[in-house]
Image 1 (spheres, chains in turn purple, brown):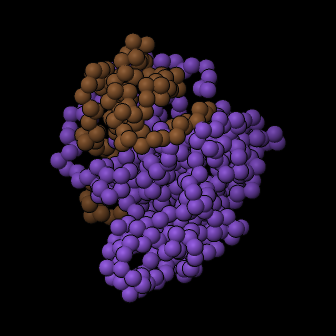
Image 2 (image 1 turned 90 degrees about the vertical axis):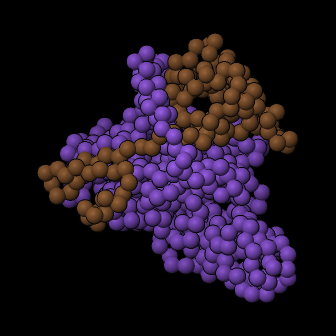
Length: 409
Length: 125
């Protein structure tokens, strides 16, 4: 299926550069300075807790490119701290030296007046917009797919929720003046892969989608602070309600196109079956695919934790989060009898339709023994979560009803 | 909003150089070394895998993948060559696939029967 014109192979010089880099990084030994993560979850077991620059201890998925997962305990609260926010790169190296005196955001292509903005210009020439939005990797929870699929074997922590401050993409486009005939808008960061043969990470949105989405931002702050380097400093795209693949980090170029964007990351990767669920039977052949887009409804129990022991006959505080693709959460329910009956939970503060919504409930186990606690959310347009996990070949968009096991003693 | 000088000292691995403006103009970080806990299993061909695969990505990319047969591993190695331009010749590619299928093949998996995943044009990157 991968039938694009073959990219040029790595040159010997690049190859040696890469080998040199690998030799350097392999010479240090991390094992004495890291602890392995808790073993009760097979997807997380044995993965080290690591501390990267500007970050607290996160669960390592891969070192090169860096992929770091947020421990679930951070989701007890709707806002994820910057230092605990997950990290995901497609290519190596990520930018490690960023000079604001030379960084510019360029908006060009099919426009009347191309723009070139410094960070100060972005902040001072446009009025800022703030919104809270979930950023979730398309492949969050991929490790739980059955049958299993290749790709980053994430647990459930490739997500986070922050207040983003930035400039509306629509305001930038209005200033530049989009010409008639524009079809797509492409976004490119300044992080260059180590070799020219590796497809540069770039994404696109259709002009129609952006015209309908005033909340798409070029964000320069996250929870009131400049972005952490590994979350896209100095600016990243924020596409509320859509999977994080579109939230291009280290944004440098916005290009308005009068044709469909030809990028590996749009044409070959991050595509889902064209069926309404974006899913297929594992044995099926996928006939047609479309680019991944809006997030599905999800909900998690954060407390008590999997495997917890609780006293019988006393109320247990159950709480967690829920989110969707931007319609907003209407209800969250829990079940202690495998879904025969459901009880409503109390929703926490509404931080906007794109945000995590906290929920809580009191549940009293009436007898000793093992219980399963299930959680499901429904959004304001009636979308919910399936009992059986749906499947697709790339391991995207998992949103099965989650379950924890606890024991009343 | 802006970090104090004291705050900066508490952030590991980050160094800021003050430019002309009050706001730091340059941000630099240093990335940690590769995860030493994701050692490749010993076996014939492991040296080729270290030289060819680990040049571009860390070993945890390999050891975390689902156990797979030679055919599945071959398609992954081919993807590295055709999509990402890895300069791996046919002979080395064969050695790599044989190593992966032996060290991380289905025989090593817990004896669960797995439904066969579908062929598809899409791949998780």
